[in-house]
Image (cartoon, rainbow, N blue to C red; front, top):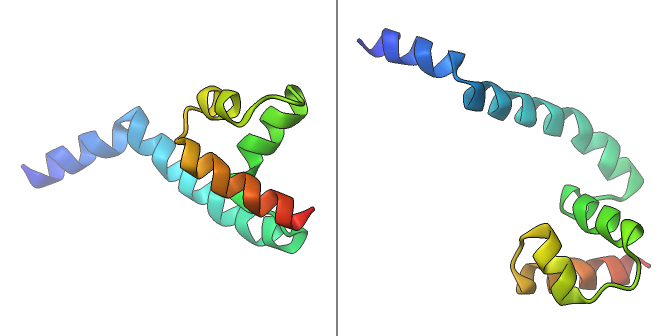
Length: 81
C-alpha cells in the first residue's frame, strides 16, 4: 500500500511543483549570491519597482507577508543601498 500512496503522491501537481521549486532555487542560489542578492528580496524589489513610493503597510499587504518581515527585508535592502 505504501508504494501505491507514494506513486500517487509523486503524480500530484503540488508535489511536482514543490520539486520544481526546490530545483530552481538550488540552481539560482549560487548565481544570486554572486550578485549579492537574496531570494527574499526579489518580491519586494519587484513590487517597489512596479509601484514606487508605496508605504510599508501597502507593500506588506500586496505581498501578503507580515509587517515585521517587511520591515526586516527593507532594513536589509537599505543597508545594501
